[in-house]
Image (cartoon, rainbow, N blue to C red; front, top):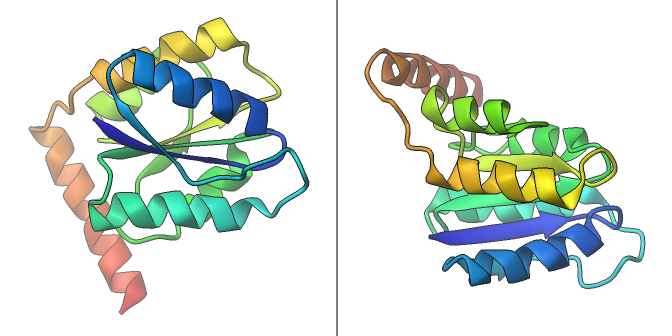
Length: 149
């Protein structure tokens, strides 16, 4: 799987480690920055990842900031992106199973490396259930299209 990564200054260290882990797990990590722990504006990096997901250049995206919340808000402004902040394996699993989440947002400040590894493995390995959930995704897409027109 091809996965775009982005963060801010608070998520920089975790993003770097995650890029290595993804490659170890057989995925291609596309690091969209930042390239240091210097202060940056998270919407710039959320947009870069979300645009790659929306355009199909990557399969999924992962964003990391202090809380995961700002990245989530910014990423969801891009058409075709379904981003959520997850804090445990169950939320990561259900975000894929029921919501076909394509951008995972994480808190660098609140989660340890082991829980994050477990969450990401679960998120990457969980398929979308489709069925009745697809009808709900279609409604979300219709809302998005209506608000953008």
